[in-house]
Length: 291
Image (cartoon, rainbow, N blue to C red; front, side, top):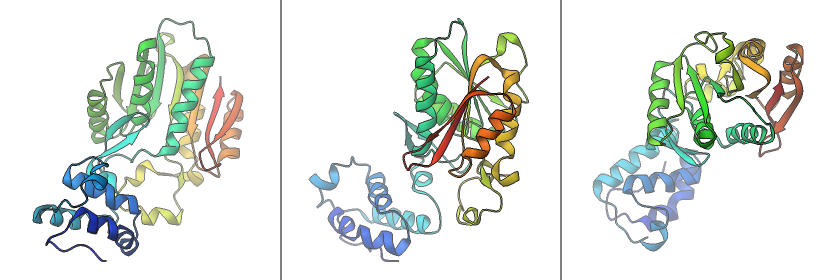
C-alpha cells in the first residue's frame, strides 16, 4: 500500500494520490478524502480552497493508521463514528450496522403511505423492529413528531440500544421509546397498544452467502438469517397481524432477490395491497402490505 510519509505532506499531495491509495488498499476513493477531512477536522470546501495545508506529524500518523485499518476491513463510518442517513447524522459503532442509502427507501415509502392514508386515531403509533443505530425509527419520528406520532424501537442488543438512544438525543427526537427484546417478545398484545405501522430492516442475508466472509467489522447477527435469509422476515410477518390495527401497514426491507418470496409470505399471512418497491439500483428492496 502506498501512503504519505510523515514529512511535509499537504492536502494537495494526498488528494493527488487518493486514487492510487484507494486502489492499493482496495477501498472506495471517497473514503480517502472523507477520512482526511475527518482527521484535519475541516469542511469539504477546504480541499479546494486550502490544498496547500500541511498536515502535522500527528495528523499524518493518524491518517495513515486509518488507511491501514480500512484496508484491513474497518469501514470508514466506524473510524469516524458517524454516518449520514435521511436528513440526519447518526453515531455508529461495531454494535450497529452502518445505515445504507437503500434503506432510505423504506423511510420514504412509509412516509408516503402515511401521507396518503387518513388515520383517525388520536394515538398514532409506529413500531421499528431491530432498530440497531435507530436510523429508521429516529428518521421517521423526526418527520412525524409534528403529527403527534409515537414511535417504539426494539432491539435485542443492549449496546445497540445505547447507540440508538444517544442518536435520538443528538437529533432532538423525543417522541420515541426504546425497548430491549427479541422482535415482538416484550410488546403487549393490547388494543390500546396496537400500531398503525410496523417497519423493519431485519437480517436477510443467507447464512451460506460467501460475501459474509468479507464483512469483518459489522455484526453478522444483524445481517444473516436461516432459511435462505427469510427466517426473521417470516417471523415478523407471521406475528404482525396481532400487533397492527385494522388497515395497518407492514413494511420490510429485504434482499434484491427475495421480492417474490417475501410477497408470498405476506399473502400467506393474509395481507392485502401487497407491493414491492425497487431501490435506486432497480432491485427489489422493500415490500409493503396492509392487514
